[in-house]
Image 1 (tube, rainbow, N blue to C red):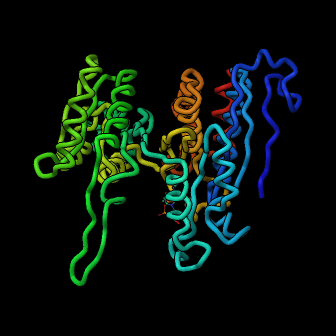
Image 2 (image 1 turned 120 degrees about the vertical axis):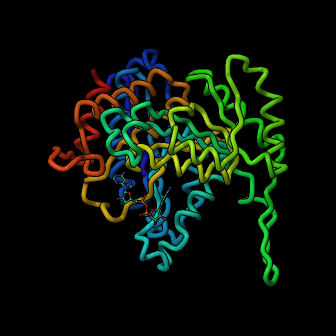
Length: 379
Ligand code: NAD
């Protein structure tokens, strides 16, 4: 079922702006809440986007479409064509999460639901670059599994991962007692990742670490060559190289040394999950997947069936994903910063959902956390 939400307008009272000239930008957003906590946290992200639209005088129109188990219930598929159509006619896709309980994966509704949905969308929208921030908030540093003396130096890492190449998409096969997955890259696949990483570093601490295994792999040597070709155009950015095994060690012993990491699909899969442990909860971590035209934004966590339907999930990852959407799809940097600042402020003021609360701390529900953040945008 498709649901077209009423546009949020600059005067917040009618379906269409009374004074269109005061609306700075109009954007159409596909909402794919998915399963489990997806719809609960998505509602909070929309609440915050509405607050941004009001404050900055933009107009956001939402079109909702089912994906995953929610889509299977309606039409027997995890990624219906109608949902892809909604994505393609939108300016960006805000995705929730897909999947059922881990012990129900053999049911048709849940079997490969996550894979069908996200791989299908990745392919359809040609999402080739994944962007994952890993930030440890000072007031939540105690949640990190690392020692205080390591965490107190600060963690603010941006991981840029190639998404459509490598062993996942190379030639593969099994013959008797032999199996193979070919690691395959072209310069054209690598260049946009390095470019994106250098551009992102320029707005941050101006350091890019290319993670590879160039002591062994030809594909890694190609990554180094492409990085070497591109980096002179970014003379203000320092580009260094690190073997993936060393990078994983340093992520847990010395994470403050990293600014932007650029890497291949396989190494990015591993490195980004190592970094994901640093903030202490999946409920805090957003991501972006960038394509040719329409980009997709989603929390890195799953559908959390263990807490779904109870109104206790942390909406921050979904809200920060909306922030990434404003930055990377709409070029709304101030608006993205407004969301990130509101989240940081809410956390610094002590707003806690169950996943980030210490024993004895007051715990907010999903809606209350969303309210707090939306209110801070309004100010
Ligand atoms: P999960 O990420 O759903 O949950 C792991 C743990 O983190 C759970 O204890 C959960 O309660 C907690 N958690 C996750 N997000 C949270 C939030 N926002 N607030 C508070 N706590 C949160 O991983 P899982 O249990 O291994 O997988 C459940 C389902 O999600 C599976 O079907 C899996 O396939 C799917 N999944 C989907 C995606 C996706 O759609 N992108 C990603 C990962 C897993």
